Image (cartoon, one colour):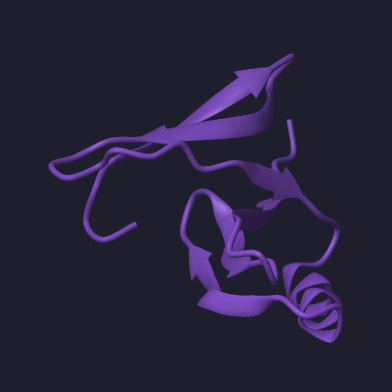
Length: 85
C-alpha cells in the first residue's frame, strides 16, 4: 500500500475489511472479498474493467488488486490470507 500502514478490521476473528491513511488520501475505497483475485480480475477485464493495480501479495493480509469499471468507478478485490486458529 505504498509504504502506508494497513490495519485489518476483523469480525468474529475473521478479516472483513481494512483501513489505510496517509498524506494525500482523500477517497474511500471499497474492497470486495473474492475466492481468487487472479480469476476475478480476468472476469472483470472480460466485462470491460481496466486493471489499476495488478494482483499482488501483501504479507500478513492477502492478495489484492484493483480495477475501474467502464464508467471509471474504482473497486478493489481481495482474498485474505488463510488464518488457522
